[in-house]
Length: 411
Image (cartoon, rainbow, N blue to C red; front, side, top):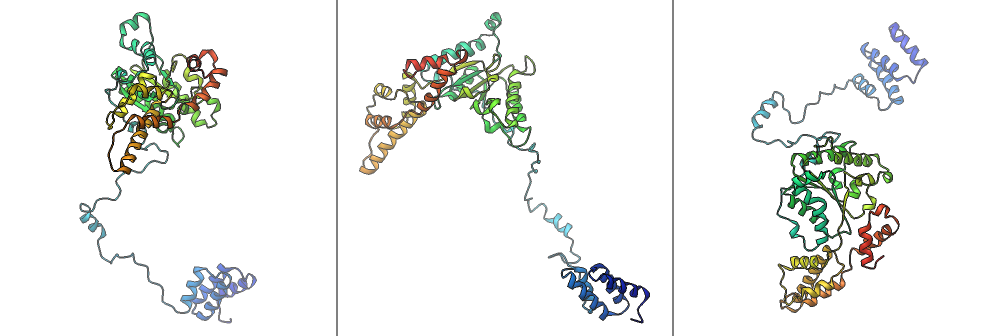
């Protein structure tokens, strides 16, 4: 145009050379609008929108060139001009409680309240070895290997008997290993801290080792204290078979804690562990000075079965129960199996009473029928243990298991 300024003429020439340059065209449109050339500005903005339909600057410039009013700035919702929101919050602060009060958990899990400090340490309880029915051989070995040196510090000092090391209980599931560990704590008058793999393992790198360290630190603060490592095959699995480095590091930390930083570090801390598969436990855990004492916990013998049956029948309505006959009928059953026999017998009597409408007592017929239906849960364990006893008894580690299998004619 003849009345265009030299700058506008230059921009027109540049836009003609580069028609797809949207920022350049919008700059031209802006100058045209400022020069009062609204129609020319609308034309340039329209071409810019053809090349960039969603361009906010082009839409705004188009609206202004067409004479549309500028949009008013958005007001915050429900906030009237002149209202003092800070003063209102201070007024209701004591009336409305805060919605969230707990501190956020750190990304590395360090503030996780489920750590070792959150575990409860049981105070010395009333369970003693006398409360364990039968199992006299197990009690005798506990007395010789663990309890007698602890009860007689003068004799221990005279004979130079060390308290270092721990005790490993192994055998089929459901035979009372945990109950025996609690009884040992009762005999010692010590606190009891039970630890499983779920208590120790953590998804964050380094936290599993920290949890393991906190377990023993807690036990040292509560000494005398029995630390019971349940399912040791999970907590202390063979490192050669463990693919995850975190699990290997956890086993290394357990070895360090068992050794103690110095000779007095674990004074008053007694370590007991239990497992169904000792052949899966890392060999380093069973070396002298660590879990070097091993006791086989087998299905309950006759006196033990009688005591267990009496316990589970004590609050049930029974009549004419011949315990001697029932003990013979339940040979080979574990403690858990015996509890199930009593439960199944009670169920039979209850259903019969419901059908007939006449309440009756639990009798021998119910108990014997229930015992006949229960399959000994220890049999699969003995099937696996037999192979270990025959082909992997290095150094006589499982001689007691071999002797039992021969006695029961299972080997």
